[in-house]
Image (cartoon, rainbow, N blue to C red; front, side):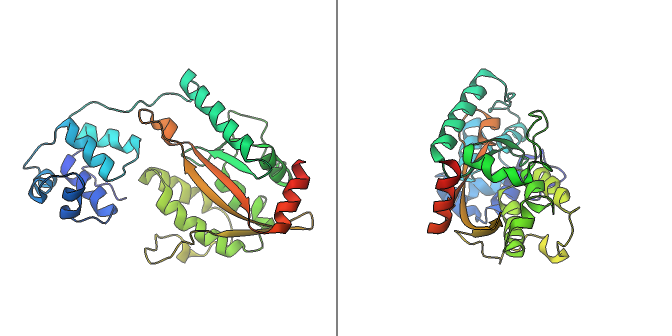
Length: 268
């Protein structure tokens, strides 16, 4: 989303989010059960929102928690959602829950990823899958975890094992545009992968006409074994903590019986 330079003015910020979500003022008004005229007044500054109205608008627009705090500030209110360090007791409990979920996903790979695409944890099958690139992307320093963008776009990472690399890369860049939690995250992610070779210039911009495959298959060949996966990305939702919402889990599933057999053998 293109946040305006006067980002802490409530009206322009609300209009930017509404435009990003491709809703008319009437659509948004219907979603929050208020007259369209009131939405217009909020965007032009002729009306000031209550704290409850900011909450209703944020929910209707599906704004990430960290960005909701910006909307509250722009309306003159304090942050509603805590930005606590991941080492807090509650966050450690959350990490344990995520690890149990990923462990239950074995023998299929699963990876926990933060808002910056840093790898935070993985299950046993994920570690097996990571082994061929572990020399280039070490897991030994938890304070400096490997980044999943580097691990997939670098020639030293999974890229060299991907049979359908070009399709995967194009699909991934469009997903980054849609899944980034803020414009700053989007810029940082695209800048990070731009250093890698053989990425055509016409891949970088958001292509609104580009149809993302609901189930995109990644085909790989590792140690002479053909593997075929599709993945599902799930966000962790804790309604009062931005860091919790920003932790995502990517679970990978075999898309054919041969891959299923290989995974069963690898972990078993």
